[in-house]
Length: 241
Ligand code: F6R
Image 1 (cartoon, rainbow, N blue to C red):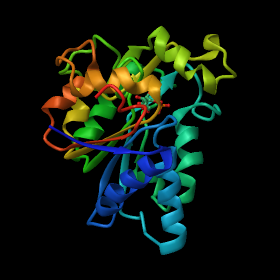
Image 2 (cartoon, rainbow, N blue to C red):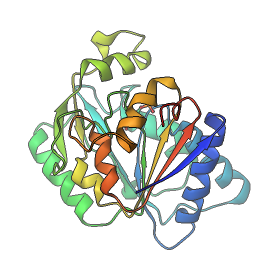
Image 3 (tube, protein in one colour):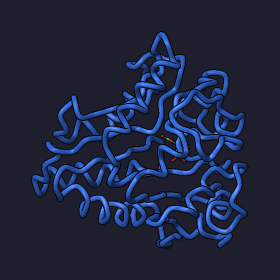
Image 4 (cartoon, rainbow, N blue to C red):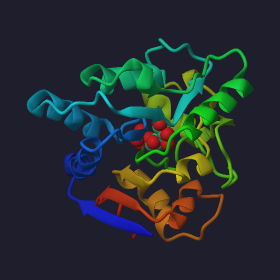
């Protein structure tokens, strides 16, 4: 079941997401599931601004990231480790030991998948932040990924590599071909999920997630079975609903 919020623009999408985030991070010892990409940057900016203005503490927050590219080092300027530190963690006071990001540069990727999933199983994510790919992926669970998947290595689709080429000097050849990602079953264990999407290029995927048949061809459609999902959209992303 989806709670759908349609706003005028990207900044209002971020404001709605922040409202939900703030209610979670100010209670107890919150566990956050975090995404990279363009969609959550506005939310992350608001979290940092709120910490700077209101002193909101993140000392007790634990985070798990969804995914990481394989084949580039952690300190690469486009790794998700770098993205998360530049866009969020450097502006908050989360203890480094509480931050979990899967390693895409591990020697044994099978072992890395197993151990990341094991770390995930130690806690329940209170709030999972998701973007959605134009092909309907969540995390890097591309079309065809089984709904019962846990953390695994995945091959990125041409569509995803071309969408993400904008971060790699517009050159699809520079976009890694593989990634490690939390699985769909790993994501579904979260207590609450927010999906952020803006722009017309997301309209078909948003439609598939909410109104399409539930199918592995649209991985985000698995969320139809989750009891607490809020989808926050601008008008362009909501245009097919
Ligand atoms: C990122 C991730 C991806 C993105 C999706 C949308 O960690 O897991 O599923 O959320 O590709 O990306 P943007 O927000 O850049 O359009």
